[in-house]
Image (cartoon, rainbow, N blue to C red; front, side, top):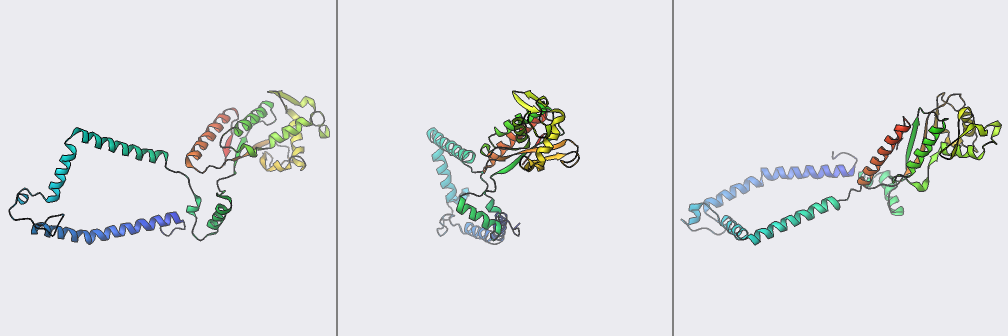
Length: 303
């Protein structure tokens, strides 16, 4: 582990290996020597605290086998535990200290992850992150993450399906993890807006009033007129050709006669530095797409 390019892992492994080496060396050398010196002290009848002082021969200490430090600790223990008030005071202090430690561990522990800790000391990535920190105050690696909502194997020309797609987009924007200020990049929303604005006056005889159906107070282009109008809109770069990569066709190309097999809409995630916030965001998104999958089978989210 000490040879890895990640500084955090490398430093930890070097520290751990040096610690283990010195602990082993201490046990093989100094510890054994100290045991031998302590045995000599006991044989010489010297005190353990003041090893220069020697006990008188034939004292009660030798008979009982208790050293000065043992007697001192016994008397100290008896003194502090002999009264009920002292016992309660010690117990209260211990419980208070334990409570403070638990509070600090639970409430005050910082779970923020700094990616610069994983960057090699001399690398382009570390220099890049350092410059971002200097000029912007934060690194932008966790900001503006794209979140795609995918729809598969649904009838996009059906008005009820389109209404569910619009409802899913609106609910996605309401999630706290989504950056609502940047809005949503949706081929369906843009195409539907264009179709409504040109209802009854579409190019090449398209978008006739009879091809629209009203659901939830909104007009949706449906039926046989849906795909010709959509393909015209996608081929025209003044309209919707920027959304070509958001749609996959059964025939493989917008020019083919096939229907949509897969499409997506895109939003942006807000910056989440703490792991607790990331966990809550993941749970919210999972609940969202599981709910949408029930009404639009095949729906999933990718970020």
